[in-house]
Amino acid sequence: TERTLSIIKPDATRRNLTGKINAKFEEAGLRIIAQKRIQLTKAQAGEFYAVHKERPFYDELCEFMASAPVVVQVLEGEGAIAKNREVMGATNPADAAPGTIRAEFAESVGENSVHGSDAPETAAEEISFYFSGLEIV
Ligand code: ATP
Ligand code: MG
Image (cartoon, rainbow, N blue to C red; front, side):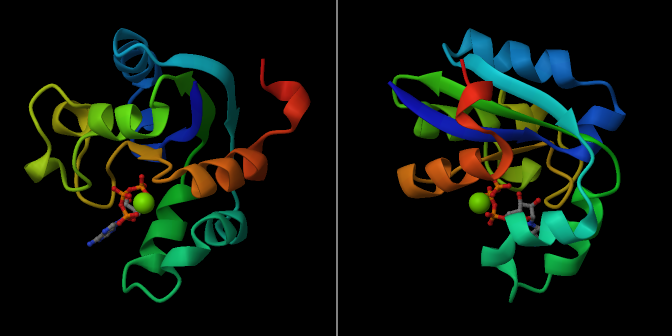
């Protein structure tokens, strides 16, 4: 089995959608093996999204990620990384397939309700950014 890092973003926590989003993960066969609600500072958001530093939306993205609490979680399952990205849908909700989290809940390409790791290496890095080994059971 594989593990991936998921974030329920501020637009979704603000609208009290954590349970509905978690239901989508569980229905897809992903198990939530770690989860906590935290408030990121803009600097911490910037560190997490450092790969996007040169992108035009970087500042807006960091501002947004620090605008309200987020729920960070580790999802486990067969092919969890790809499966999670499938359940999330396309980055832009306008392009997201029906039934996906972003199609149902996301507000815009920036405020798109969830984050999911995109590869095994980034998943491992992103999990250790938020969780210690003891917190993952
Ligand atoms: P994530 O990495 O959050 O799972 P993703 O891999 O689908 O999403 P990326 O291209 O890695 O998308 O972009 C990271 C995040 O930056 C997006 O989820 C979104 O919140 C934000 N973002 C991406 N493109 C734009 C844009 N054009 N304008 C504003 N924000 C954007
Ligand atoms: Mg990405």
